Image 1 (cartoon, one colour):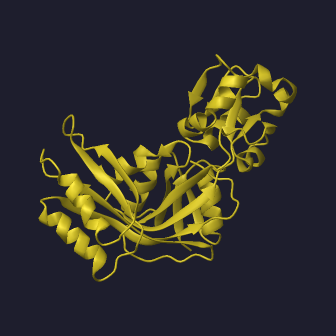
Image 2: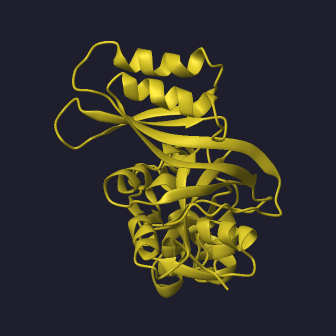
Image 3: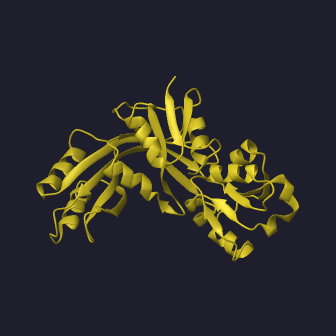
Length: 289
């Protein structure tokens, strides 16, 4: 039986995704996203499943930054799941949920429900927690407080909370992508609908040379290689210094993709391949960080 690290505690959106993709394996909850990756590096688990991007709130920067700066891990799979955010309260306060004095959740979940919170809880402070399930757990453990959590239905069941309002996220098409990370290049296959192949790289440009990014991207264009994501993140070496994370909508082959990478490196750029893998859809799992 394999061990899978996920952002805990029990009942998080990531927990739900791991349950759907690894039903026969042991799930190991972690307190933070970096801890999930560190558990893999320390051989405490076989894989880590961490959120990378949400359709409403965008990239989970903590995942990218720790993967680039700290964790030498390989992406061996991608899992995409729909997200449903609910407002949960302790049963003691089921009839007075609109009087909640604080809203607890993960920062991304709070941002995904901005319109609802502005309309129903204008002026009520929102407190950030390490995960949506951590927020639900806190509400469960403090029945004397009139507070609410933003979390999923799994958390409601896990911690015995009342769903005051369902589907409070601002946009209906709310999905999150999760990465499966490993110390090895072992290829994973799942009995789930496949979304296609992808190769993820990080490109670091030579210092302050005009036009280099344009030239690097052109190597994909003339090879007819589609890019589904390009995003910059600080190198943390000074203002204006960035690395670029790029998703190429094709798995590594023998000619086109390696040729593009070689051409980019000939421009003086550094190319780091994070993984070449397949993506899968995890049913109608209510999932998020």
